[in-house]
Every structure is written in structure tokens, then in C-alpha cells.
Length: 432
Image 1 (cartoon, rainbow, N blue to C red):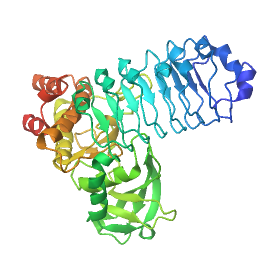
Image 2 (spheres, rainbow, N blue to C red):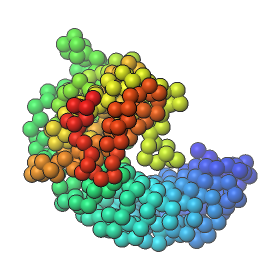
Image 3 (spheres, helix red, strand yellow):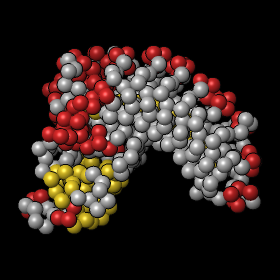
Image 4 (cartoon, rainbow, N blue to C red):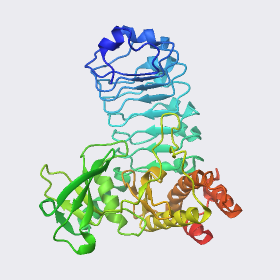
């Protein structure tokens, strides 16, 4: 984090990213001295409610973050910033997104946790839009113009007021990661799962908490030891939810999906419900995966947008690739058989052991499909996830020089622009 003193003393000359969080109520004019270099401007955690009309003087600005401020509308001046492609206004008090505020080069728009009830029709005219985060608003419909957003790959519309999902949405050729939990559309099934779960309960006091294993948008995961448990169940992982809306949606939607998923050898799913947390938080207990398993890739970066960032050293042989592919396909087939769309089928949500063993986790973006959906409607959701698997397979194939031609043909089938022509996970399981 930078300081105002550094900015005003000229110590930051030539930087490409500026991070300021110091109670700002207006943009310091000294920022404009960075106009010839500044590409990323992070103003999150201030008290801003407007941006200056001459912001386009920052002619190289590509990314602006204004989370946790006091904006009630996205400033229209952003639409005049020629190079701007990523805009983030999470956790403000937004009630309005003016059409004029949408930059022509927009690729990534974050509006999570606000009070928006309408989106402008002009959003559909942003042909480069790839990633749209709308969770935690008051939206009940999307503009029909968004059927033109053919580059859109990731959409978070959880925790809103959607009574139905627009039919055209599931036909977008590049949409692979969709989260729709926490809406009236599926709330009845979520409630039923939470009320009828047969998972056992485990009291916080019965556990010995250990090291931090990881944390994400929705919660924190710790190692835990259960002294009184069966010998093969004593080493556990405990996820405690933060209890607030995240980029994926409500924690209770993740909770419901985890419970509905059940146990599977390639899933990191709940084995018990956590009770009696000292702060009253909700939580899940999961089997602890062995230390030989590590995260397969890092999450998308600002430049990669919707695609994971894999280590440059990542390499795998064909048999390892096939074994991992079988595991992921089997897990996804299991979930869709239970009416669950994972919504976040990414390498950064996979643990692998380097020998083909793989586990899929993180149900933060998962959606429970309503019971009334027809088989054909469920298959439309499944084919979105098949596209996500096709992207995974593409990443693996670039790191597997000896991959057989049939794997390349399978990957091509998964990423067809015509969603209806893609295989289902049962087809993939048979092919693998």
C-alpha cells in the first residue's frame, strides 16, 4: 500500500500501479503526475463518492478498483477513459449504472454487493466483455441486449432476485462459469437441502484447531484434529464462513451445495456440519487431503481475465493427464447427477498429486438446480460446465507433448461454440 506522503514527495514517479487507502474523500491531484505510466489505480477502502471530470488525463489507465467506498452510481467519466478495460465497484451503495460509465474497451466489470435493480441496455454493446460480477444486488432480470455479449465467459448473478434464468443466456458461445445460487429461482431447493440434510453434526469444542490451510472469498479453512473420532477420520479440514456476500454469492448457497454434493472420491465435499462456533459462524467439516496434493494453478490475473495462471514448470505425461481428466469428469458427472452446477470448474480449485490423483473443491459458485427443470434444461447447464472442462483440457494439453490425437479431438468437441453440440459428461467418461 502506498502513502499520500510518497505520492506528494514524488517518490512514486513512473509506477504502473498505485494503491491508496487512507480515508480519501477526493482523488489527490498529484495522481495526475503519473499519467504517463499509471495503468492500475486501486482506491478501495476510502470514502470517495465521485471521481474528477479530468480522469481521462490518466491516458494509460487500464484498471480501476473502487471497492468499499461511498459511490451511489458508477461515475460517467469512466466511459471517457479510452484504455480502461477493468472496472471494480464492489461493496458501495450503487443504485445506478449509467450507460455513459461503460468504457468502450470493457472486459471485466465488478459490481458485487450493491443495490442495483437495473442494468443499462448498452451493456450488451460491450463486445469485449468477458467477466461480469453481479452477486449481491437486487436484480430480477438482465437486459436482452446481453444476448450479444458473445465473449462473456464468466457471470456471477447469485444472491439477487431472479425468478428465472433467461433462455438466451445458456446459449452464449463462451459462457463457461455461471453462478446463479441464492435467487428465488432455486431458493426452494436450497432451503429444503439445508432443512433436510442428513450429514452428522460436529461440535467446535470437540476439535483441536490447527494451521491455516487457505482462505477464499467466502471463508477460512483450518486444519483440525478430532481426538474422539474414528482413526481414519481424525485429521480434518474446517471451513468457517465469513457470513457476508462474496463475489460468488451467499455463503448459505455454498453451504447448501456442499451438503447436497455428498461424498465422492474426487470431491472435497462436506462430511459434517460445524456447530457451536464461538462467534456463531456457520461452517463445514471436510476430510483433510494429504500434503502431497497441491493446487494445480493460480486464479486468473488482471491480464488473463477468465483464464487460470498455470506455473511455467507445469508438465505432465499422457497417462497422468488421462487419469486427471477421468477424475474431474467423474466428479462433474456426479454433481450434475445430483442437480448441482459447480460454476467454478477451474484448475485453481483442483488439488493434484503430480501422478494423476485429483480433487475438486470450492462450492462457492455452485448452484442447486430446481427440481422442476426438465432433463433438457439440466443438460444446458451441464454443457456450460463441459466448456469449462474443455478449457481445463486445453491448458493440460499444452503441457503434455505426448498427448494422443483423440484427446485433442475431445477437447475440440468440448469447446464448440454451439453449446447444444457439446458432449455431456457421460459421453466424456465413455471416451476417456
